[in-house]
Length: 229
Image 1 (cartoon, rainbow, N blue to C red):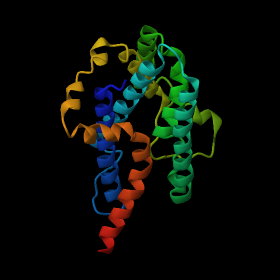
Image 2 (spheres, rainbow, N blue to C red):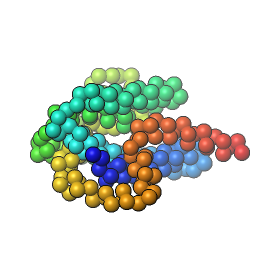
Image 3 (cartoon, rainbow, N blue to C red):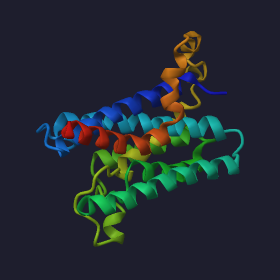
């Protein structure tokens, strides 16, 4: 059973992500001078987007595997995410080698899926550990680039789309706990299913990986075409 509220939350994250990357691309091609992605408001905008993605991941893991872990389903889905992460790393290394993406959102989602799986049956432990992980990151008790600063010396000093394990893994664990909420299981936005246009709202959330992989090439091509015309 799908929960419409989760699909809508993921659709919102997808929409905000496309807007964010469109603004980033406009800056990259010199159409605007906005400080994307590191300016104050833009950084907070990104925090909102990744928070939605990571909470949804935790909730989805909880709902799908709290009673029984379907290993084939889990391995297939996680492998798809990992393959997408590899495509992004290879592509970014080819096109923007000085800032290539060695650990971005998809890398984080694949790793977090594996690390959070043992906690899907323990919502209270997930909540406590998630809060601790967020606190460690918020108070900068470990380096932002942990553990990569210990493993590799030749990674770029600045990388696009980097996701720090602390505090963001904490958001995934909080999502695992949220998946046990009766309020969420009651699907508070489920009434949207009665709307004849509901499929357009939930479709992005149900195909988020495909959109994540394709939206940037599409945006870049559109901007290039605009420049030519």
